[in-house]
Amino acid sequence: MHFVITIKPDPAGAYLVDSPAPTKGLWLESFKHGVALKKKVPPLSVRTDPGHGSRFKDAIPNQSSDFVISPKFAEALTSAGVTNVQNFPVTVTDFASRRKHGYFVCNVVGLVPCLDRTAAEIKWAKSDPTEIFILRRLAIDEGSIEKFNAALPPEKRLKLFRLAEYTSFLLVSQDVAKAVQKAGLEGVEFRKPTDCGDFR
Image 1 (cartoon, helix red, strand yellow):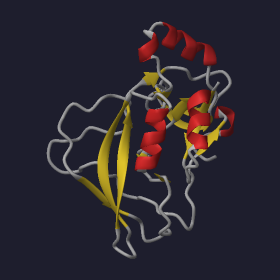
Image 2 (image 1 turned 60 degrees about the horizontal axis):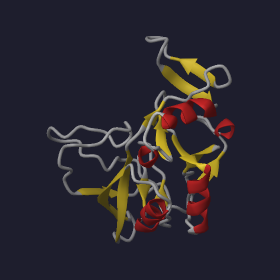
Image 3 (image 1 turned 30 degrees about the horizontal axis):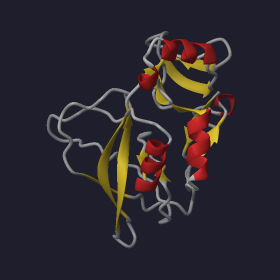
Image 4 (image 1 turned 60 degrees about the vertical axis):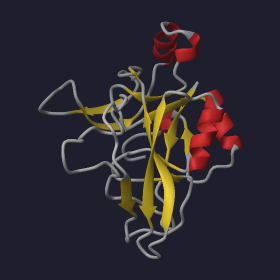
């Protein structure tokens, strides 16, 4: 069984409108495409949004769907056997106190095509009927995940990955979800795929 990593905004919590990803120069790769970044990543920094709070949890929700996590969260993933990530340090400055906090932008390297198109509620883009415009309700095919991982050596099988058809969603295996929950992290939930969607 797999769950969706969900980081919900909290009125009292920190929130990022801007992405930590650089916007100038030639470095234009994304942290949410599920592929390894090969270029050198410059020092990253971002400020929290003044329309939200200043409570810093182990995961910071953001408009860009980047996976911004605390060192504690990163360590919990490593301890649970997740190896397919690139963690890039990012300095997050609180808009109110101007206090700086050390986080990581976690680039999850791995895409698994496992969308259950018949059970999911999908609005397709008018310009391209093969592109998802809105995913109102997610549904995944566990058999597709098993088949994908079965083709890999045991040490390369993915316990954390992005949904290939719609990379905003991060999926995690049940054993990793349980291990991370035991770490007592704040600001993250593990939800059943059918309870998730763009507006859920």
